[in-house]
Image 1 (cartoon, helix red, strand yellow):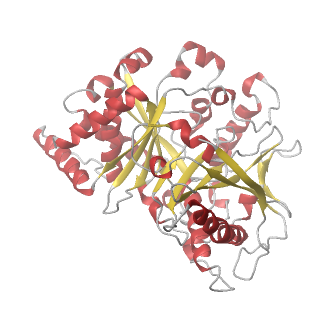
Image 2: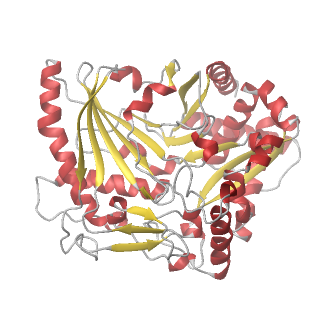
Image 3: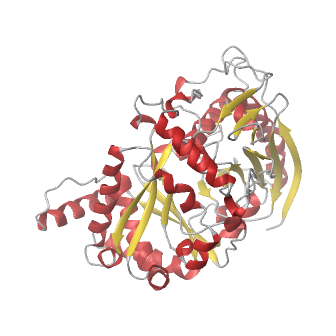
Length: 487
């Protein structure tokens, strides 16, 4: 696509009022990174993209006029106000020699980057469910996130208008060491709320559930502090360097080149989810298995997708994993699982990873879906004994394998992973011009991750998104559709 950059500006938090963050925007703020944050210290930025229709205009010129005179001013103003409550998003992560660990700092004058652009691409094509969209078509629509060895920005935005096809997109890049999915959508819905009211009231009050909670003492017990020490030592000695405090993305991700990959979205309707649940329950009863199994919407949709992915990539998986155990890694929000629990509006990362393990032969067999559901159910039950610490000491080595691990094949071992959640209500992200037409996770450094979202068509549906090699996507689409038809 041809992309024309109109401006790159800086948006500062508007000076706070009595209803905003307790610390006014004109003062400094520092937050320590917890061990849950540290895991993501050198992980690639996370990119999300929203597509919105613009009210029908008679011509591209009218679309541009509406975009630049109405949409951009409202988004800029409301973003500035929203940052009152979310000061750390305008800050940077630093790790000075005098500090034992990295910190998140907002200093008076810090801002976020906002890029405004115009594109001649087909908005309706990019925001559709077509499977013939090259994954790289989305890359120009998300901004670069500033980083250096000394510091890393937290968030950046890009707003792109498509004058020839009547829509615009909002691209977001974020540093995962500061923000998890729940925190991201808490911020976005705060921005939405303010944008809708910015010209209606001088005093915009956020609902309590959208006001971030910054107290991190709930993640400072002895086990958490021990994990912090393990992670910090691993980062400080990474890449065979001593005192390695760099914030550059790990070399294994920067050097990864994705070619011939395509994006696809697939829908589980509420009726199909119920059919999956009934099918699994019936098969287990036929086997005489009356044991409890976790038949949540996530477990069922994740298990079904896992089996379809494995079948679609069967040949490559046999070469990489040797026909043995196949892992599926997924994240669990732990705010309510801690003792005492953290509130739902806790700002930062509060998720733990869990890994379901199943044999290839079982997953590819007639009862592969039951095998996958059982494996995910067991992994979820395993969190009850140690929510944040079950195997957590190995996360850095899993995310950032050494050269020795990579050369021996361990670093290439295929691990299916998930991101997002159908519980975030992503399609409620309405800035005042309607629900998004589509929302996408933009993967630049990796493929094969399963993303979850609430269904764009509502009705209790779940949408999954994938970026795969083209021939794998075609195989997956066929398996996905045929399997649901036979339930």
